[in-house]
Length: 371
Image 1: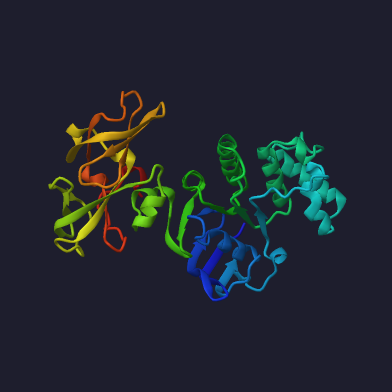
Image 2: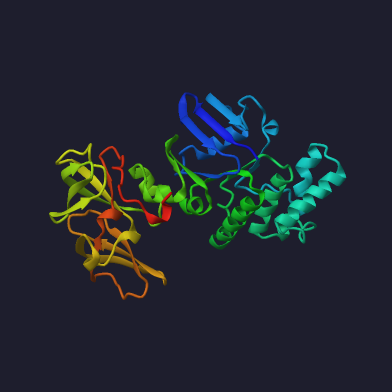
């Protein structure tokens, strides 16, 4: 196990910046997920840590040692790629042992390591099979096992589940999480899927256009996004955004005008907000409530109703709001397009964002993440 430290890490190709001034501390044994949209620099950052790309500027330390100039084989990292990259003519055992053979490890030691890792990954009954005889999940476990036998200090995963179907992705998320609990190794995992990030990570690093947008525990990012980008990226379905205007503001809250000329006071730090300023109100689909319980109630027309069994996703048209807003409702409710639907907002569940996208800090602390 090892810590990983990035200080002002930059990467450029032909003068075009891919990552800029990345500062990050990854603790020994942490499971850290890099997440963000395509092209945000997350895979490039992982490859910089692995030594597969040269660092343009900054310092990379693994276990306190600067490793900028070290080749990948000397960094004590192991990488699991999106593609399984298994040799089709070799058995599971031979694929797992391949790197150790290249390193001229003794046959007895290779056998011991392959058998030990295969038991952990539940591959011990499959060692003689060829990749063509395995499921997608089993092939991915072999690829992980090939890395594990080398006993790296840091595991690097580059979107390892993207080639699997939805069912297998869920299964492999669980398996990789259990593997981390068992090994207690430092793991850095890249994905564009925020559900993977939320369910697997000790700490999430949200990247946007080559820069860190926010770092924190999953529930910290969910409840307290520092900017509109993170608020919209974390959470599924994503947060709703409504245009509002500040009618009054102080350090304890902001009074806003909502569509329909209604007012509501949101408990956020409004010390920098000016009266008349255009703001964006953010509300997650699951945070809408029944109209009679709300600080602000409204009625709209259902544009689309998605009935998913345990819940409904209701896409509602509101007067004065250009886009449909999405609400999560009771799965037993009878809803259909064209119906009128009443719901409401609780002020302490709302977020406010300024024109530059930065969030006004919320005062309300969610009980689930106290401490």
